[in-house]
Image (cartoon, rainbow, N blue to C red; front, side, top):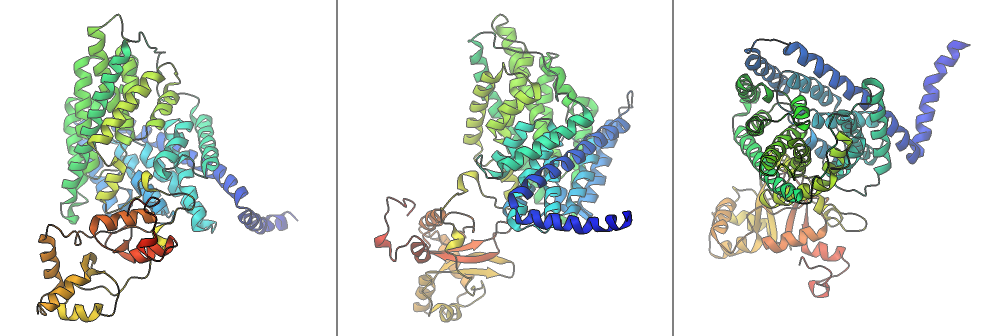
Length: 593
């Protein structure tokens, strides 16, 4: 009888899943709890494994040569693994998570999750100065994706679980369940009012509970209670916001510049490139050991007032250099943790100077280090709301919130002005991924490009002669035609330019030559390959048409702008808005025209 009951369990489980699948709300809540608990266990294992490996790599009283050899060998091992087996596990994981959400229908392979776990554990344990939070978000989102696909859920349901897994991972990795929810909505989804809010909250809470059950109830940093000494001190926090904002921009620009240089190297060198980061970190760490690793122990000492001005300045500068080289060269790890380290040192520097000049009216440097953490995070990551709540959760101290908000706002403003593109979007663009910005994401009934797009016409080729091209386009009403080679789209050419060349008797001229002539014309913007994406609003297509002078735009993939998915025309957009001609369109309602 017992054997019969056991055999019946799989059938009952299948029926339960099928029943839940028909009731999507219940399934979403149940999966959120399951994913939160599972992701919490994986992240806790990641933290424990990294800690144990670090203790083995750097035993107390170890020789100084370890600080050079260990990160170099570690980056060599991970470089080979990343190149040979886990190419998607490079970097932090946040841009890849967003790419999975907006481009790949929520698909993250189990292999990439395993690769991220293994490679990041090795990188962090060997002293590479990158963080664990970004990789944890990728692992959590990946586990959510794998579970959803194994259950046979729809693409929409799989996509909705990506931020759920990411929030659960961050809650466990950083012990900040509320900030994890906000970060998932603010950075990954880009919408604080996303309908998956309830699921994200549940998963974050479940993961946080697992963390506390296994590792106990301890904040990431133990910080004394700081408070505002006088109103005059707010002026110093304004200065901290300015310095923190400039430091954030310097870090982001250096990282992106170095990454662009590494990207120009031959692809065959990808496996060895991380060694450049490991060796640089090792040399710096030989002379200044605090540069190694993410450095949370050093951050806690600074937060508790153990600050030497010269050391704080040195660590801030060296950490910016070490993190930039390590990340740009392709090591696995995030920039979440390093941004807090940099911010704490910048804050401690400003606080030390202020306390020397105005000892009676300012707090100690530890208070400024605390605010500096959130300030740098707001300037580098560009999630100001998350940074405020995160610092509160990390320290469990509410008294410093107002100065933190002031510094955050200033740093965020400076960062936006001096570095137009947020770091995760810039990193994705360097990888050829065109992710939607939060300002361009639409809601409700706003029409998208996909609603007006049509099939791709037969493209012209660069080698095609004017005579052949004219024959191809003569019966079409399209004002512009896409030009593509064997690798994909390279630009657009106007039909009237082809006709003009034909009238001049230039029958043997190639389309490529015609585009070169048009490019030299200052008044012609038609060959800059203007394009749109399916998930962008039609107003963006209208604005792009105005900028380029085209009335036909290619609709391209966000994963590769040279892959055409269709075209959209000015006439099609008018029809989508319910008008038959431009004369009927109300320009007050559509100012992009």
